[in-house]
Image: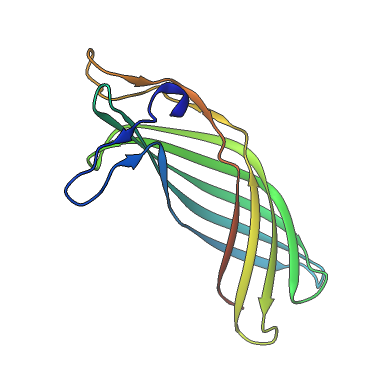
Length: 185
């Protein structure tokens, strides 16, 4: 947004002061994983996650227009995991990424693009206690996905009289660190 002029400071309003653009409000994420132990050293698993990255806002004062882009990623990962002990595991696997970018205006989606990409994930996990049905897990993943081109995004989708953010490459590679609860069946 900065290299295309969407980097002005918007004026203050009734309840806020001037705001520098572009800026991003970050989102959250969740993940669910099922694992099957092949033997004491190796397990296989399937992980599903949804990363709600957030929203980036741009502003151009010459036309008094805002541009709001929401972005999120959904992943599906089959994993092979090495368990050096009952407490710790590391895993790798191919990942199918479904990346979304949406142009919103007053909570109405004006334009949406969705791109699927094959990538790769690596993870580590700590699970404790070991000999109970329920356990706590702390996990980290790095998700590597090739960049994809999104856009152009327009201030209006009428046939005339609009400004545009040209197409750009978006890199959705990211790290994930989370904690949660599990159950042994």
